[in-house]
Image 1 (cartoon, rainbow over the protein chains, first blue to last red):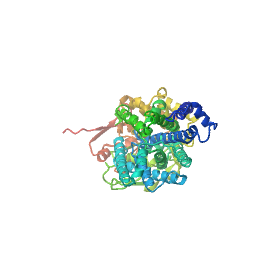
Image 2 (cartoon, chains in turn purple, blue; image 1 turned 90 degrees about the horizontal axis):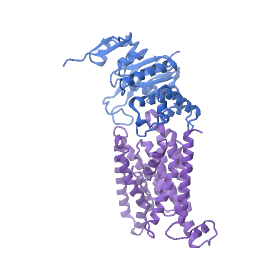
Image 3 (cartoon, rainbow over the protein chains, first blue to last red; image 1 turned 180 degrees about the vertical axis):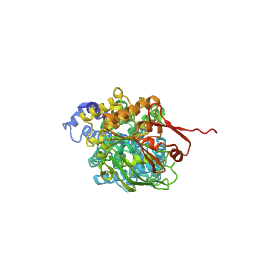
Image 4 (spheres, chains in turn green, yellow; image 1 turned 60 degrees about the vertical axis):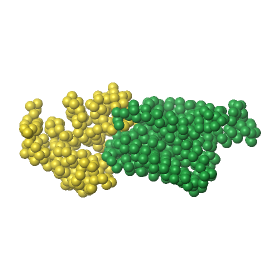
Length: 339
Length: 276
């Protein structure tokens, strides 16, 4: 077994252990003040089916953990994918405005009355995916109009597209029935409310599909870092690669936004922590980002649930409070020379 | 039927006007036409492609590696039409050493060199033991083996160029194309680069196509030269045939003096700098 294989195996085992610990932590603490014994009893089915412990553990905490882990993993992998695709280490779904595009799609779908039953969840995800595609396409066209994909131009295009879709969302919200407004705003801040099993299944399948699209091209993404021309001279079909990654990253962003809200900066923070430890090989980064992102968002959400208990913070507030300074730090230190 | 590369009546047009899809870089304001152009490269040759800025030198490299396709004519590689070769097969035949290396992500030297192994087995997720051995051999050949674990942004310009060359060697091509390999190198690294090229050509029997701005470098290293001017081959031949004062004056539009390099018999070109 070669060195990168060993490194990947060690990393995945370590991240897996940390994720498991985070899951345990999230299961056992929360505003309902359940004892560890009660949670264990609920998990093993020894508690009454309609007891508080069972309902809170199985219908609230477990699905919420699943949503957090899926959304975190999806957003982190989307971050790695967008970074490789744009050859821009600061690219990320929320920075590029792709999350805002997906959020616009979701709000639109909600106006049409799509909820979280199995079929409606599919429709919701489709709207989010379409919104993500439109936003990412717009950013790409704006940035590519100049000479190549400059880091500054791309970030600026992302900001512009993000502002545009945020304003469009505001317009939609002004139209919505006042009584439904609260839910939408809560969701826009990044809301990891438990979702029904059917919607959770849709989320898991779509995230897996997006992950597979990106993971299958991880080696080619390394070559793309040399530039499209150099990659094609090494035998990579650059057009097909870009389409697949574009689609995969938009799908990951779309489903995370549809079922957890536009949570910012996960795709920036997690990949960069991993880059510090693993380097820039996408074959290591893509699978590690799945586990690392899941752990990160799960911990952030556990913090959000408990820091001002019994009230709750939105997890998006936590990630943005960490992410914005982190972005500035990256901009001022590591990537200063390259801007 | 001995030519390794055969450009037959090749023509190529950059679509005008600028700014449209697939259009030329903005600096090339007018529509650009290349050809008709024919030349061949024999196995084991070192062929230099020289000519003024925007004469079409880099376009030749892009045609040869199928980044762009000719609008007329046919390119053959060992008698096979280039247009029909699978991408990975083409990458096992022809490797390119580019002018510059993008640096958004500082991969390590070894990671970069291993990228050259991609066309040998594109389906793999990680390279195998054979790939790693080939990469080590390539790094040893260009003297970057001890730098293997370093990220590219910590290397000097010369070291980086040697790492890029190692990546191309790891590709184990039969034809090595270098686009201005010495453009950013100081004298010592230029000398190292020339020594390396000669060694690769002799020991690995690799054919070399060298796109060069530096006429003296081309004269020194190449067996044959192609002088490109405004999309046409102004002359093909040995350095002595091509590097003629009269011809260079008309192609470059300035006064030049050609004499013999004191270190050998090759021609040497100097600009006759105008007084005022």
